[in-house]
Image 1 (cartoon, rainbow, N blue to C red):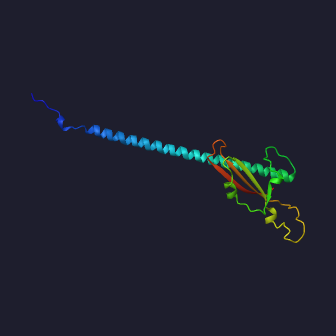
Image 2: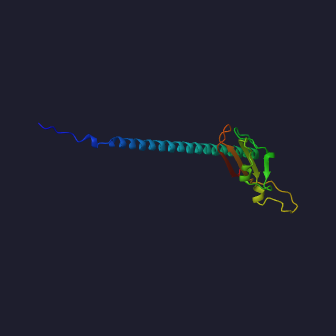
Amino acid sequence: MTRRHSPDRRGQRGAVLYIALIMLVLLALLGIVGMQVAGLQERMSSNYRAVNLAFQESEALARSAECSLEDMINRTVTAGCNTVAAGDIQSCDTGFDPGDWAAARTLGQTSAINTRLIGPCISGNSTLDLGGPINEDPNPIYQVTTFRVDDPANPTAQAVIDTIFRP
């Protein structure tokens, strides 16, 4: 009786082991790349959230200042308005750049409001050196600029909003 022998085992050199190890290394590399991509996306979404919060808080500050201006003009009181005193309102005669103003905010400052009365400068309500008094502007126009950081304890983003407000 003749026996059938399996192929010579000396011809096998562990090729399956090498292929399995290569596949394992490739899968590990894919896992590492996937973790790096997930970490990057998490940082991007965190930055997006911080910028969005700063923008929304700056816009809320601007709306509150506009509410205060409306109350000052109409001589009313609305709850929740951020108080803007008449002395805080600048005239349009002084130069103002919102970008420079925002850049001048100190590191510890978390919010700021700048309000300018610009109506007389654009509606022609000025003396033009004719010697007559400046009449009260029946249609005042204000420039309201606000600055806000997202988190006062750990500021990572800041936003500046510049609006034109006509009560």
